Length: 83
Image 1 (cartoon, rainbow, N blue to C red):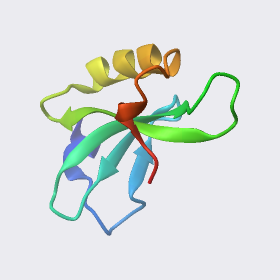
Image 2: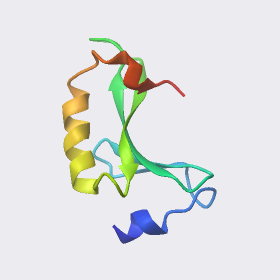
Image 3: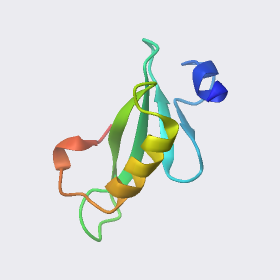
Image 4: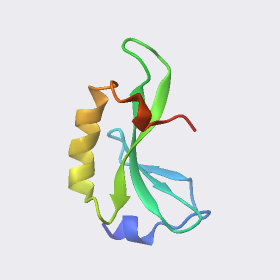
């Protein structure tokens, strides 16, 4: 958790990875959001970003669970951030 709190926009990469499919995205305004990449459609190689929640309202543990759930579901296309 100390690494998440210490992460600053513009100092390192925009997204920090846990190497398990979960990312922490940092924004210029100081916001930090957990994200995961999912396939845009069943069997597709194209991927999009899904925002799982904002840190610290969403814990690292809860974000990891949400990332696993979202990896198996692409039915809610409105949650995919294609940036």
